[in-house]
Structure formats: structure tokens, C-alpha cells
Length: 428
Image (cartoon, helix red, strand yellow):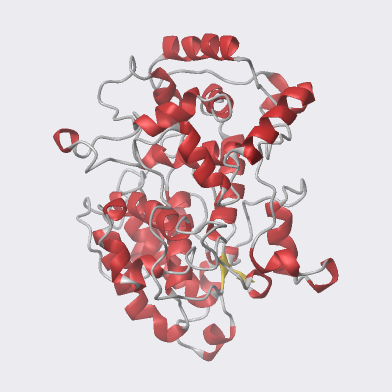
């Protein structure tokens, strides 16, 4: 029966009492929404109190969390897991000592072997450092915010991976088909992705001879884009997915007018539970709509576009009385008001600029999303060390030392002069 899994989770949540953080009844929920609406603008300072302002995952376990094991890991016994297989499984089941954000990085820029050399070919992750630089250079604007190319790369990662469900497996998922199977780009759901698809194809054409696959390129691009945004998470990245030219099944992407019931069930069938869905939706903090309402083309989904923050949650909860320049999807409003997803909107909204919990939750759910339809997880290689760091001057200075290998298909703001290093605001 449709809804049985979520219904059981809600029953468990109700019975568990203190197990679920901030799981109020609808009366209390309406009161909290009213409080957030009263705060209104980006200058809001709604935060959790005291012990909740800590690093790492700080939200209490809940039956509405995503914990299902996926892919080939379902059938592999503990003794047969590789280091990567075990790490990914731990992330999937929310093991407390396995974060989904990573700090592993090449010791210095000069420690990366030259591209195309035997030393670089011997290190699976070496070429991905060069890919990451090309992407980072394109994904960061002069003021330190993330560009439209970054925003599109995040959306592309979602659209490729989310073309999978339990009912349609093993077809679809994070397999590169959104670029490799032209039928997918003819679908209404994928409007607005043409430029980033062309960009991915150019990167693929350039880097494929070095072993770079399309499925990995798309997911790596989504994680590089996230960390390119000020305050964005540095999500652990894994390489070795198998490309496919078979188009993903249709009807697996969330409609912007969809009911909460429909979209929650859509994601439950991807193994993503309501709390995970609420966390992933926060990526709308960097998005702009182009086709939902042609009269408002380019309008952002929160009042701080280009910055990775929790303002999306506050702006969505404030609808329709919030910032008139923010374009809020009806599906987001529906989910913000549903008792299964709404409490997480409130949790993230009250955190204000203290967004470490959301980053941790987003990273964990994005690792899951990026593994949908991947049946060789146990054989992947972790290449988090090839990821750009969160903003620092050394990477900005690289613009003087490393020439971009592949030109951009996006119109870009003027880059900093050689003597300039672009600043990033401490808060937004």
C-alpha cells in the first residue's frame, strides 16, 4: 500500500516521544511558523539554543531518517566490504563516527603530479584534482559567491541520480545518462540544464582519455559546486561509477506543484526518508527558476542567492508574506507545512547562520543520492582529496598558475586581476 512506510515512521515517531527532535503537533508547528514569519528578512538570527550549537550531526535520531542500505552493499557481508564499501555503508546507516563531509586533501598544490604523467596515471584521484580546478574556477564568482554554472551543476547532479526508484531499478540513477542519453534532455523536467549538459560534455571530451567517466563527472561536479559556494559542505567524493546510455525512466523527478504526499512517497521509493528530503531541498538556496513562471524568470528561491545558507528554509516558511523577490515553489511550501517534513524546515530555519547541522545532514543525504543506481559501490575509490577546499586564498591564487583546460559555456563576471584575491563575507 502506498504510504505504508512513511505512515509506520510517523506512528513510531509519535510513540517514541523524545526520540525525535522538535516533532511538534500541528498547533505548535503553526506557532513556530508564525515566529519565523515575524523574523522575515535575511538578517534573522533564529538559532537553536546552547548545546545544539556544536559541530557535526547535532539532530537527534529519528525514524524519519534515511538508513536503508543500497546498491551492491545490500548483499555484501561485513567481511567482504572494502574500506570504501564500509565507509559508504556507515554513511548510509548514519553511523555516528562516519561523517559524510571530508577533510582529506593533497598536502599542497605542488604535491599533485603533472597531468598525463605516469605518476598522475598511477593515482586514480590525480586527474580529478585537475577536473576539480577547472570546475572550481568556473563555479566561483569575483565576489566569492557561486555562479550560475555552479547552481546548474548541483541541479544536474540531482536530476541524473534521482532518475531511479526501487520499482524501476536497476535502470537509472547516477549513471551519466542525463548527458549520454539525449532522450532525457528532451523531457520537460530537464529544461534549463542545456548549458551545463554541454559543459559536462566538453569536460568529458577533454578528460575521458585520462579515465574520467560521465557519471562520476556529474556527481563530482555537484559536490565541487557545493563547496564552491560560501559556507558549502565539502562532501566526500567517490569515483568509479559505470556509465550508461540507457535513458532513465520518466516520472521520477519531483514536480514543482506536487503535493507533500506525492513528493514524500516519490523520495521514499528512492530510499530517501522525509528528514533526508527536507535536507536535500535546502540546495534551493542557490537556485533560480526560469520556466515555472516566465514573467519572473531568473528569480531566486531564497533571498541570498549564490550563498550556501539556511535562508531558503526561512523564506519558504515565510511564504506568502516574505521577501517579494523570492520565488517559492508550491511543492516546497507544501513540504514545509507537512508534519513529516515541516519540523526539519523549522530545525534548519532556526539555526540561522549556525548551519553546520544542515551541512552535515545535506552531505549525508547527497552521498546517498549520488549512489542511487550504483551497483559497484564496494569497488569505488574515494577521491575526496581531489576536491577543492572550502574557500581559501591558495585556490584563488591558482588562477594565476593553472590555466583552465576547458572553456566555459556560461557567461561569467570578470575574474579578479592577478594581484586581487576575492573576499568572502563572514555571514550573509
